[in-house]
Structure formats: structure tokens, C-alpha cells
Image 1: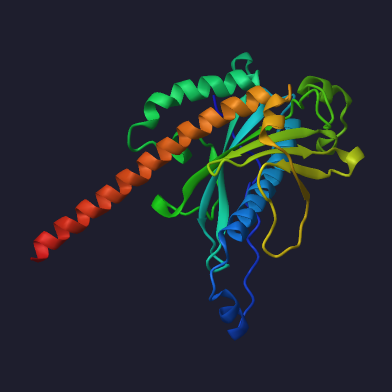
Image 2: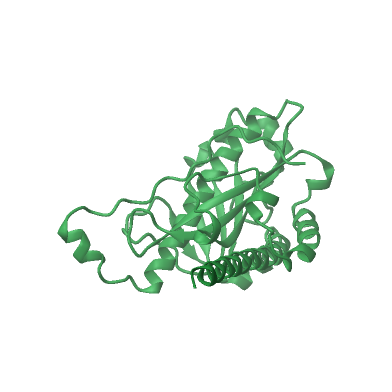
Length: 284
């Protein structure tokens, strides 16, 4: 079952382009792909940081209610043209939450089940992740083919053993934390460009620091960073006892969702082409 989402999860707007002739001159030349995608990866990690912060608040506030949340959440990341910076991309996201239940408690098992549940449907047309799986999405997300699925974020309040993040289960954290600021989290991100990231959401004791390990460059085009990203080999991530199985099934599920979104876009383009052809014949 999905759970209601009680906080607005709106991504921060991308940095506005400078005004005037200088801005036009500066953006006449398309940025190279390394800059474009490193910037988009940075936005993706930043968006997951925000989703993690909201998720911690929601889970904390609902921990004693009948609608208490499972300690895992998914973020579906989309790539679309930036509304404020010409020739750049921006991230948009949808998200998926569950009510707490033994069936969704073990994270690798949850991802495994989702992958096998949706794989047969991914080959069909008309499967829109935002409608089928999410409980909400960013207001600025483009409709139809304007936004393309680009990755999966897996956020968990069960922090992984064998890593540098605070360790423990969500149940243990609830016994010791005083507020959402005391709740650690870990996020794993798999993108369709083969980027893998592991993100640590720190607690009050760590000044709520957010750090990112990534297999590919993660940096904003502006050069102004709000968090640090470090290069880590993917095999090292997969060999980690706390991340390996989660990353494996997150990757499988993300591939399934990418196939589904490709089918959605192909169907929309075919429908648009058929409609154009019909209009052409009527005019002829």
C-alpha cells in the first residue's frame, strides 16, 4: 500500500541565467556533455538530499500513528530541459512511499519483488511510472515526452552496516533520537548513464552533513557546491556488504523502469505521428 505524503516535496529551482546581452552571448555555445551531465548528476543528488530530509520528517511525525511509514522510499528521477538555463538539463522527481508492513521491510527483497512485478508490464505501452507507482511528483515536471526517466533513488532509514555512516535500524533510531535531525539515512542512486551513487544523510551530531560517493563526476556548472562528492569505484560499492544487494536490485528495477518509460515515449510519438498524418490527409 502507498502512504500519503504530508510535506511539499518541491525541488529547488535551478539557478537563473544572468540577464542581458552578456547572458545571451555566454549561452550561445552549448556546454560540453561532461559539464551538462555532471551538473545534472549534482542536481539529482541535491534533489535526493531534499527528498531524504522530507522523508525523515514524515517518518518521524507518523511513527506512532496507524499510518506509520516503512523506513524505505523511492525517488524516480527525470531529465528535462531546464526552464531557466538555456541548453542545460534539470532534474524533476516523483516519489513512492509505503505504509509499514513486513512485506516491505527488507529493502533488497522489496526491490527484487518490484522488479519482478513490473518487468512483464514494462514491455507494454502506456505504463507511466508517475501514474502507476508514485504518490506525488514535482510541480515543474514536464508532461508527455518533455520529461524522460533517468534514474532511481532508494532512500532508507535503515543505515547500512560496514559503512562510514551511522549504523542501526529505524527501530533503534526511534528509541534514541529526539527529532528528525537525529535520524540518519542512506540513499543509493542508479542513473541510466551507468552512474552509481551512495549518499549519506548525517545527523545533528554531524551537523546534518550530506556526502556523496559517485562513480562519475558530480559537480554544478556554477562551481558553487553545497555538498562534497567523492569518486568511488563501482565494484567497491557492489562489494560492500551494506550496499551490494540493494544496488544490484536497484539497478535491475531501474532498467525495468527505463524500458517502461521508453515504451511510453515511443507510444506517444507514434500517436502524435498518426494524428499528424490524419490531419494531413484531411487537408489534402
